[in-house]
Amino acid sequence: MGEEQTDLPALLDGDKGAWDRFVARHAAVIFSAVRRRLLPAGRGGDAEDVVQDVFVRLCQHDFRLLRRYDARRAKLTTWLTVVANSAAIDHLRRHKRRTEDIDSQPQSVLAVDPVVPERVKIPEGVVSPRQALVLELLYRRDMTPAEAAAVMSVDPQTIRSMHHKALAKLRAHFRAEVDEGEGG
Image (cartoon, rainbow, N blue to C red):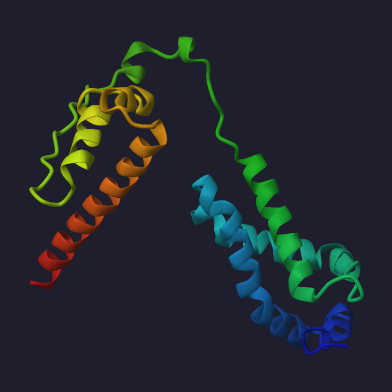
């Protein structure tokens, strides 16, 4: 019997100290699994509630769920991760955001202030002239990569590649500016 399972018989017999050790030993694994499932859904703030739900599930009905654990099939931490994932999925299903028919909403709810995009000036020398042209065609002239490729007489993949490299250069440039501003 592995070290992580040594307290299970005592825990299943109702030993409070064994339960406390179990919770202390496995809370981080359960929290991590729950959080990993909830964060992409924008529900990371619910993680502690779901972890609490996992522990309730494990001990309710005289530890019925925990008694089903089979050490021959998986490590306890693996099994707890599966239980935590299931609890998180159940939570997401129960709290799924309700959607309403857009036609039934009053106009005032749907109204949004128009957003005027800010024109970003590309600093001199950060990107090559060809990369600057690609950015001009894609963003200011609102062309597709295929249309920009036709204008420049190149393959659309070349446009995508130049676009990607130009954005990487701009990100690095602006990140360096921010870092300098924070350090100086």
